[in-house]
Image 1 (cartoon, rainbow, N blue to C red):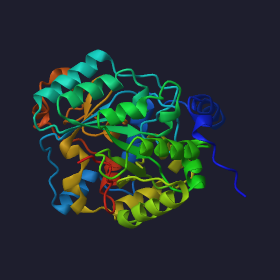
Image 2: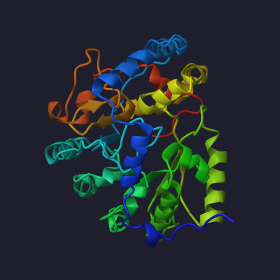
Image 3: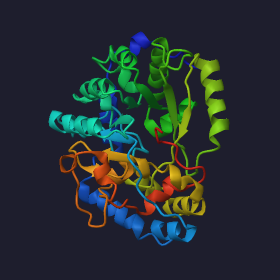
Length: 367
């Protein structure tokens, strides 16, 4: 018989960070420097199997243009209690960068001045571990904006997080939570031991607070990442499998499933090179280019802000230091008054962008 799943009381308040740090030492994982992140992107751009993304757009007849910003995504810190293999942010307990109150307040001011912004999407790292997380949630909901928390689930069981589900529910925060598979062995291969058990217990905790339950207005969505060198299967079928297995095995309820393609940058780029699968993966992405996904690309209606207040077209460009515009110069939240100031600025693209246009597209957007 399989060992029984630990009770939530045995996990609550016990940090995952020591185990994560120990595994990072075993695996030799360390944070990338800015030069290393740029170097990996340059290597990918020189990859012969994939044509330039802009050339593919031109051949398709699609003109990629920025639209009024609907979602302002704030990456408020790279600190995390996990260090996942697929993480494009390169998050871990070793990355201490966090957004300051000054930058957070400037972002709030921009949201207030930008009537087209409907959603503030807070991400990380584990954003809940950032000192500005609750301040941002309180102020943005006070402005009448919908707030999203990109949650890794295990953070809910970290010390001093006992009141987090109550806080999220009180502000009707939309939780989008990462659970790359409904099978423990697949989650362990991508995210490490203990993650699946803690994630299941965290979802059950959110369910107890009304998340994912009919009539509460508390949305809980889950996120699937492929655990191999392939694209996501059809979302509708996969969502049905998630709901059936998680419901039958663990009594879990959630609203929708998002399918996100693993981006060939940072840790996943290194994983592909180590497994000698980079050429094959890029071939899969380029051969699966689907022009019908382009209207829904995040870079068109999102602005992504890093912990220092620097603005990017999307979180993927942020993690490769690919700045918007043609000159490659940083643009800060302190350089603009509202999101419409970014409308004339060209969206920057490189070959990693194929990850958002392959197959059915990468459904990580919040709109």
